[in-house]
Amino acid sequence: MQQKKMALVPRLRFPEFREAGEWVAPTLGEISVPVEERVGDRRLIPVSISAGLGFVPQTEKFGRDISGSQYRLYTVVRDGDFVYNKGNSLRFPQGCIYDLQGWGEVAAPNVFICFRLKDGYESAFFRQCFERNVHGIQLRKHITSGARSNGLLNISRETFFGVRIPTPDFDERQRIAGCLSSLDDLISAENQKLEALKAQRLGLIQRIFPQEGEALPRMRFPEFEGMDSWEPKTVEQLADFTSGGTPSKANPEFWNGEIPWASAKDMKPLFLDDTEDHITAIAARNGAKLLPAGTILVLTRGMTLLKDVPISILTRPMSFNQDVKALQVKDGVCSNFVAYLLLSCKRRLLDLVDIAGHGTGRLDTDKFKALEVMLPEENEQKRIADFLLSYEGVITHQGQKVEALKKHKLGMAQQLFPVMGESNT
Image 1: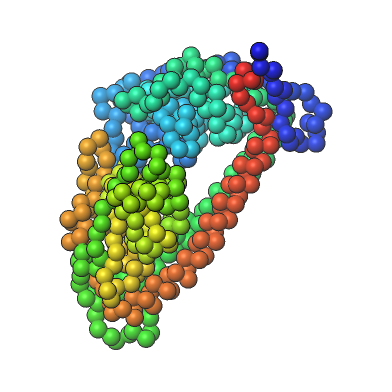
Image 2 (image 1 turned 120 degrees about the vertical axis):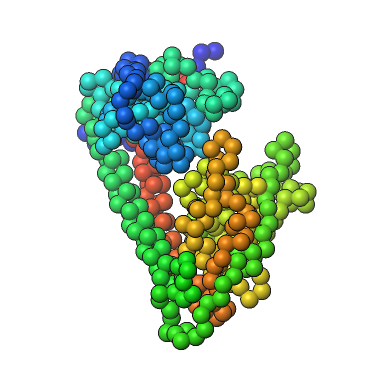
């Protein structure tokens, strides 16, 4: 029996549009034109598209320009143009779409699909559509296998431009775009405050911990003024190292349990409360490493290492994968202090990163263990850690504020856009 076509009407409409008719659903091919101009001899910034971030220079994402001999075949993308990266990600399993804003012109890999909206179709509304993953909901039925050897999904240009975009009249588009864009501006402003707090924390850390070649910090708490200098130690003298692993994905008894299992994607906060993936007690009994709260995790392999060395401290027992090293501090050493100490050494840790296969970053474990740091006596360690922990609460509160705004925007968007599924196509 043929499925009944659903009316394209959102659950929430602004008062002036409540009596307006249904939305239409033109194909992407009907409202846009492909962008296929090749770079040739022009010198433009080679970019990539990253889910959640948008346009990123290749030198920033990969640590180097990876365009090579293909550069001449890259596509010229101008402000206002959209680019579809058909690589899957957690946020956009069917690929992400972003429009270029404020760059002028860039060079995008020719494996990406680039397009420009026709006159009468403004970027602001359609940007929100793609953020809502309107394209992915429809494209998933066309994906017949996993990513190809180059990491891209098997989506043809014809299929992509056949995606239908729920579209109201111009005035309603403007109203929706204005509402959601104002929330974007608010989220951006609050996120800037969050980044400023993190920068202030880093500034404090740089003053509270001795810099490379120094025996004492620039700022010391009054009760420790005039006391002995800090002592040089290697990281290996402060903590025992443990390697992680991945339980077999082929065994369903190992996954979707109660035990957090940390990997690179989880190591954004300094204090790690939970993870995206979880394993079972059966997996733990069959060899998965399970370490207690207070354990410090350091990413030692991954693309992230080309620009950062993620460090997290566990607030509960967790397991972790093979790209991560776990550090359990020894007697007389404060784990929170060591976590902040490693944060103070981020630049030195980045200097220890080299490039492994396929351009992946690798933090040499032997060099990491041998890294020389300065250590005060235990009471001063705890005083420093407690002071920085009090500042951490301010950062956590601001981060929660940003996440609350993101959830509010998501809830608004879910009501302002009609559900777009197979029955609408």
